[in-house]
Image (cartoon, rainbow, N blue to C red):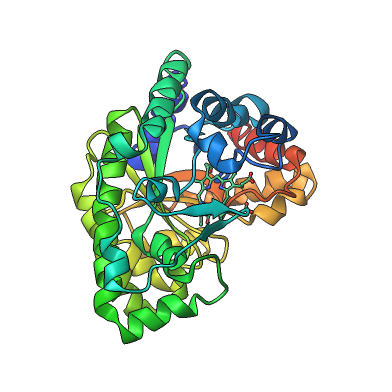
Length: 344
Ligand code: CP3
């Protein structure tokens, strides 16, 4: 078999077709750990960088050129389409919402607009990236925040350890949270389908905070949103990757989402996850991002262990278990991608 292109290897791994070795990319691969990122960001806010097509294209491509990742993810944030719904928010550095959403009236104020019209720059960035990457055959990923994680910040107003305001709504005013999740689900379907139309070859749904729920609450509040999104996406054109942080206890429900790939954090043992989900879905992950501070030989050994564990899965995409951190050493990221390319 001649060596597959990076797009072929990535898409085959997502679909559970045979590959020579797993492909590699990293969540949050564009970010403050790269001096070149900090240089492009100098003097502009994060939101401005997301809205500036030239800058966002450059930031999206940096990890490909600088640290050898094998897929490009759109430089943006899960809150960009929420800005398109008319929500007043700032990044400090995480999202801070001026007027948190707590009532039905607040939910009804969220604009249900076509993201192609409300955040046109996102699709312009994707079209530009796709044409830049076409010749090299590097896969382009789009993404969105999952409704529950978006709702968590919208209700709370900012990040939180336990999201008590969100849970209060869930347990005390379920109709309000249902209405909010429904509106966000509609938006997410439109937003991801528009990304696929603009050239995204796979899309990742980030449900960072859904792991805060019990397995029963997850099934009631989160799983239906994932299933609705999976059902309504143009999946023949782009596989769906689902990420839940701290989701070991909901792995069985994740496998019922309809996603093609489940992206797992490091608390889940890959081989064990593969046994639990069987041949239904491929897996992505799952090195602890903090492990990239270790010497290159250790990182290479972990990569080989992950590859071996991932062999039991329907398919495997090598990645971290969560995003790169501002303090992640660039050399550690390089050691990670180099070790994947060295797999035999
Ligand atoms: O993966 C990538 O390289 C693509 C870009 C991307 C960003 N955010 C850029 C970003 C993606 C996929 C995200 C997703 C995102 N954003 C999630 C889900 C994944 C996760 O990490 O759990 C969440 C919960 C958010 C919300 C958000 N945006 C937070 C909590 C923060 C602050 C975190 C931090 O790094 O301090 C942001 C800001 C943000 N989004 C930055 C970047 C590069 C840092 C902003 C800066 O450079 O000042």
